[in-house]
Image 1 (cartoon, rainbow, N blue to C red):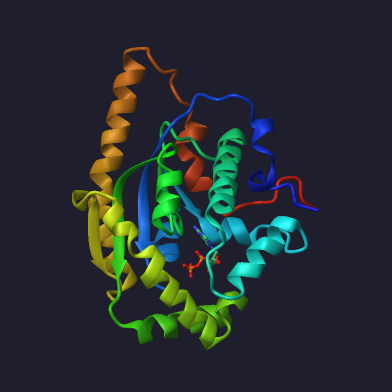
Image 2 (image 1 turned 180 degrees about the vertical axis):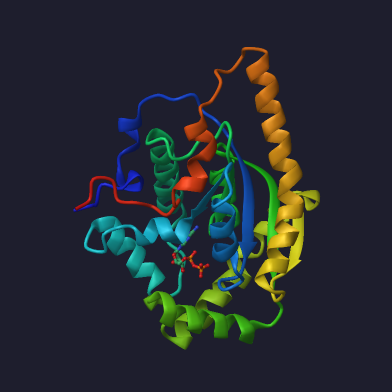
Length: 253
Ligand code: ADP
């Protein structure tokens, strides 16, 4: 049985919706580079919606067929197959829109953990309008391994419990994920030293996303004033401040 998360719901039930490419900031970097930490901080700011692909996977019931597929790959430190991953994530984000958690017309999507290879980037072209890639760079692999080990203990992440799996995850990153930085135009990539303190990394990210967010707000206000778009309510404005964007089982006991 699959838990009734938006991710697990068949896309068909969401009905026909006008296709929209979500304005997106990609948080990019190796496992342990701090993408998730920064994404969670941004999600507390109104107007930002953070989605971590790994969290979407972890919200699946491991006894379900989808959950088993996820575990089969993640327990070895490998990537889950592309079509499966992208479809699952697309269903999830549509679900978030449907349940009024994600407001793409006013919120900037902060994405972490997807796309994780060039194929996924291609499969997401119809859905994402990537405006910036924040590339968290850490040259010291041992530092990453250390961070992942600590996180495994703190967050009970069994996929990072063994050194062998951690090393494999970092190898997969080098071989498959890093090339995604070549896929996007150079002027969209902003590199940030991931070994700096969290607040310094945050400062760099805020510097780059603030003008982007202001641009979206300005365009939205202009549209509202011209009567082209209905005024969006306060609930939409504050959605990301009041809710955790972590995948929540819908109707789960
Ligand atoms: P990290 O935060 O360490 O980068 P994640 O939580 O993003 O790790 O991912 C955990 C595992 O979930 C991955 O090792 C992989 O098996 C699977 N996974 C997450 N995102 C993707 C993706 N975009 N494509 C394929 N597999 C993924």
